[in-house]
Image (cartoon, rainbow, N blue to C red; front, side, top):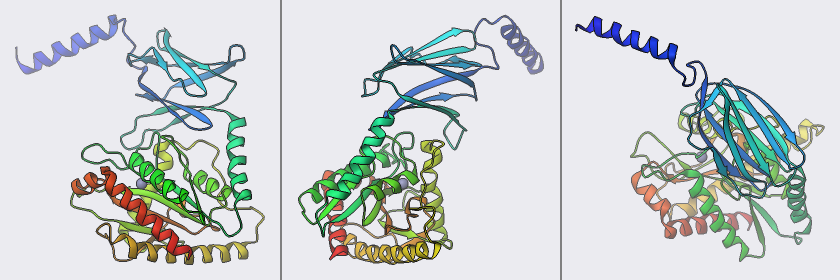
Length: 383
Ligand SMILES: [Zn+2]
């Protein structure tokens, strides 16, 4: 058989198989994966899809359940039941109730507020359907607890908000040995908290306490509720160039980046909202919408000056622990650094994409040293 005959034969075979196939129709999307992330006040469930789908949900009171029907889609994942067992969900049951129709039943442990939204494909992420099951009472409690921490702090005590970047759906940069930025920055953040707990004059809090996603604006809101005097966002850098290595520090710029590298980095870090799946309720960044603009500018000015002062202190300390990428701090428009009332900086601890740096980032000894260096910089800044 010649190649043309062969092609015709295969096309014919494909046509026949489509016509007589009892398997899912060609046009329907597929659910290729399902996963969940447990946050202190909600559970986020994410479905990976091959295409957009239509959905309709309804809540049941007794027993508390959420039923979600998806149209134009079939199950590709082998999972038919997923055990969750966090404070909010016991399990999720998946079934192909009929051709091109899938039903998900969320077995809740208590009544929850449900928020469902689709995320468009982005970079290596396929279309995703996000189901947030939120405990509104717990959300309020968390907020009140942060405000209580602010009110009970002894006079003269300073407060630091440490912000481990990324989390949940957004892993951040990834190392050659698959080390994820979100895990490393959380570990170093936890080590920092332990250092601060031994110190009476400075209180420290984490914006993120586990593997879940927090939108960038929400991180500022949390820091403000704690009454933070300084905000430090913790990250590890990533590059296509495996030779790139070292630590660097960034402050906000209100008028364009200091250099191209800083601009590219800010764009990458700002992508977190899209990768992690920010929901439709973004928190407001400014403290009070009625606040006088002149006052706001003054606050921003002062916060920026203070963030430069911290960055300079940090650079002097950090160079004793790791190679510096730049001898000075850089500036760009990072969303997470936009609080006008809190001096804010973003630290790239090392390059997770560099073999040597990745190895260091995984070492307990290096993590401790880094935490100690950041702790020392903060202490010096407040002196
Ligand atoms: Zn990052």
